[in-house]
Length: 478
Image 1 (spheres, rainbow, N blue to C red):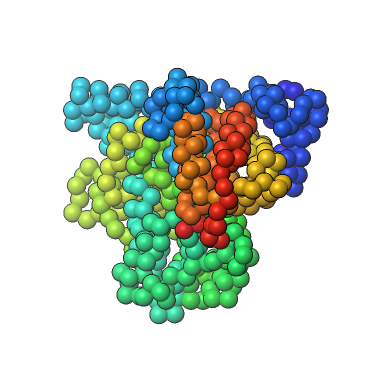
Image 2 (cartoon, helix red, strand yellow):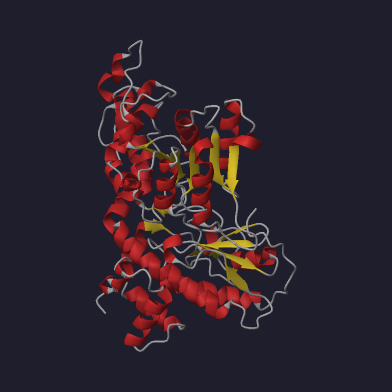
């Protein structure tokens, strides 16, 4: 086997389940897909295997709550939590130290010195970001944090009228997004109960149907000003059909924006082709750029020159006239007009260190590995943690359709997860829980392995064997 990439059918025929592809690989090589030897074989033939070395992997001994008797302090932890916090690129230390030394050695002159002069640090990363979100590089920029960018964009794109004033979001969206939409409606004098429309799951279902979103836009589109949903739902891991929803929203005359916090670096994005109006994201998850890292924003080029209302700051000026200190802002165009102030010179290099790794790995290869890696997790969970007469079991909430998910699988259990999470932590396993009963497990194709997945399922299977079933509320997410 020359490598997983010879499996061209992975991207060419997404109708074939990853379980079937994995079984075909196992059969071809006379291996048992359920056994550790198969996972080791997949790791040995993984063309992306060396990228794991590019990240600082937490050791069991550095994590709180691990038990030395159950997890060797010197061994790497089993990290499956990139949906909450990506791992640190090893080069980040050197890049930040370089900035500190340049500051110490040149003072104010660091504003102009390469690499990454402080005054022009927002120039950088555009090409890489454009590739990740499927956009012209001039349409994207590193700036601020996610919620700040959300507010800045909504202040411009949410221009309510007495006839068209509603905002559409998904129910159970990440709380800060809901807070932002509620406050945007209130700032314009509207009651959030009337202005903010939440798309709900159907009764008895775990995720939201794309057709329900589209049906709402077709039915009530004339009263909707902005559609602003998550590309990938933070709790269920569901990837929405961004192309179809954007198309329906624009046809109804709405502005369409996307929160890409759990989508960028995780799933295929084509913002320009889809006709998205605006988007925003943070960089601490799949972009591996640290807590509070610099976020990003996108504005479609068709809005260039429209001079939509916006807040302004020093960096809203065109770069060529930024230092002229004009009385009137020489407003830049497109997404650059939304910049307000200088990005952090200490945080930009961390994002750039991660983007370099993405450029080297390439999203097509990452998506191919993700297809198999998350598929392997799905296969083993169904085989070992599904019903099968087990008193305590797990059910996958995330859609089975690989076109409706990324790396993350969300699991619901018929037992309290407090004990389960404690036992996982003792063994050096890092994932997280969303009350009342959702566990998010995320193997990242950049640094997780098939052996990681096999080990995780073996560990949690043993833990569940010691648990008792409980009555758990039906709701899968808060």
